[in-house]
Structures are given as structure tokens and as C-alpha cells.
Image 1: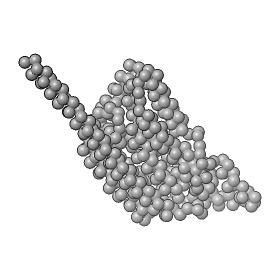
Image 2 (image 1 turned 180 degrees about the horizontal axis):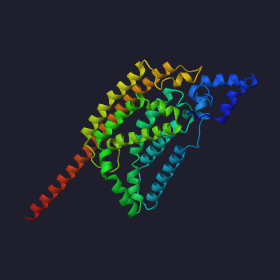
Image 3 (image 1 turned 60 degrees about the vertical axis):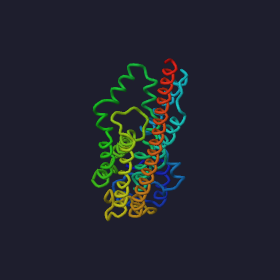
Length: 333
């Protein structure tokens, strides 16, 4: 179900009333919008509408505010006792992390996520690929372990190292979930169901976020997770994800059927062509997926090089200590 702003609804209905629309005319209008018979379509997509159609009353908005508050409280507790927390982690978590989620779910984009497939695909990219990366770089689990009391800290460690967590964060399992999910959504009747039911659409948003976290957290994250692969294995897995977005994006662009069946044509939008929008959606997934994957592959390589440098410095220090002990022993002899 579309989220329609009451002001937009009133403004769109006003011309019909002034034209003396009868009940029969209203019936024709409802039939033109198919499943959305009781609601009007949002205004043409524009930067202004993205701002004016914003909402702050969703459960996701409350969750984002709560997550930001808890994170900042943890940082405050660390600094109050004299401990240091990198400012970059806070920026990553609050900015592109939580802020990225808000930019596609709380902003006016939400009014078009069941109207334009291209907008939904932007949400898909941000929720499953962009925001989870920066949430992982924010290291919230590490922050919680450093600030929680003994009891809650032990329970959190038990969850992190539980059998369920070990299975879902195992790189191959996480990769399989990350790759299979979009195909299971877009090439079955499940996508049409999420368009018809608002609660299912919100669940898909949450699922995108969790899927991205499960995949990227073991690869790029700084938190202590079980079964983490060495950097060569992580880089290989990231490289394997690049063709997946190409295949999925091209398949969507070249599809001879509309995703969601007759949902988008039934909206009767005069300012959007469902076929052209579907081609645009596939292009967004193709280009955006490859860009993010290649960028994250570069980040992994940089992290790998830095780890190698740290290991080399550690070995040098150990050799220096051994040499100093040997000289001390020779002097004593």
C-alpha cells in the first residue's frame, strides 16, 4: 500500500470534486488505480516531493532514533571514564549507516517505493549494500562490549558466539543468502505480495538490512565475530559478488514481463512508464552493485595491506627484542 500524504491526497482530489465527479466517475477513477482503489497516486517524482512527502511516524524512524541514541550514549560513557573511541567510527555509524537507512525510508522516497520500481531498487541498494557496510565499520558490538555491565556483556558475548551466529555469519552461508534473496523476491509472487501489503513491504526493508549486515559484517567489520576468514578469502568472496549484480541487473533490464504483474500499469500514472522505469531499475542495480562491490574490494585490499604492515612491525619488534636479549647475554658472559 502506498503511503500518501494527506495534503497531496486532498490536492489531487480537489480537481475531481470541482469538476462535479459523480459516484460513477469515482468508480471509474478507482478502477483506473486497480489495487489502490481507495487512494490517489503521489505527485510526479521530483526533489521537492522527496522533501515534502517525508514522514517521521514509522516504526523504522523510531528504531533509527533509538539506535543512534544508544550508540551516542555508549560513546559518552567511554569518554567519561577517559577511554578513547575513534571519531571515524561514530561518523560511519550515524552518517552513511543510520543516515543512509533514513534517507530511503523516512524521506519522501517512501511515497514512491511501491509506485516506481527504480525507487524501490535504490532502497534495495542502500539498505542491503551501502548502509550495512558503514554500520559494520562503526563497530557497535565492540562499543557495547566496552560499555555494558558484566551481566549484559556476558549475554551479548554468548549471542555473538552462539551456534546460530556461527552459522549465519559463516562467509559462504552469508554469501548464499545475499545472492539468493533478490532472485527469490523479484522472480516469484512474493514481490507482488509486498506491493499489496504495507507490513510485508516494511518487513522486506528490515530483511534487506539484516541480509547486508550478515554478509558485510564478517568481511569488513571490526567487531569480534566467530569464524572470520583471512583477508585473501574475504577478497575472493567480494570478487565473486560482482557478477551477481551484473546478471540480476541485466535480467531485469531485458525482462519481457513487468515485475509485480499489472500492479504498476494499474496505477495509471501519466508521468511514468512502467517499462522504462523497469529498465532504469535494472541499470541502477547493475551499475550500483558493481560500484559498491569493486569499492569494497579495494577497501579489503587496503585493510589487508595495513594488517600486513602491522604484522611486519610486530615481527621487527620481536626480532629487536631477541637481538637485545642476545647482546645482554653476550655482555654478561
